[in-house]
Image 1 (cartoon, rainbow, N blue to C red):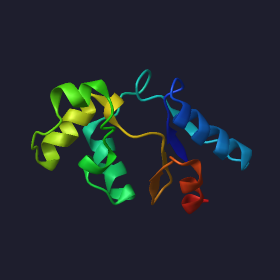
Image 2 (cartoon, rainbow, N blue to C red):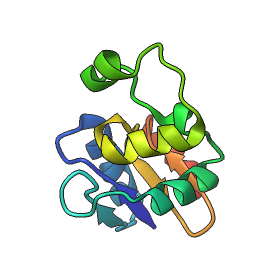
Image 3 (tube, helix red, strand yellow):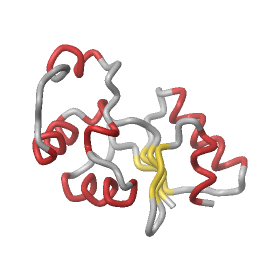
Image 4 (tube, helix red, strand yellow):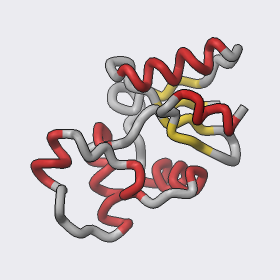
Length: 113
């Protein structure tokens, strides 16, 4: 199990804590610091989430509001935008071998356990 985690985000911390309280020690991927998310990884995560790139965008982010709000992009363009602007990804994303969920609220993670 992996968690795409940003330690400064309260929602991400809550998701990690939820997993740990359930007895899981996931592989922590700090995608904004140590392990940037690649296009291939993002495509794989989207497939496991069964979502489109537009579904996992944090629309309240300043970067989104200033640069992308109200504009039309196709899926490939959104994927490139998310890889270049990983702060726009909803978090945390928790991934297993065959499925992934956005762990906000943390109870969403139960679908993987």
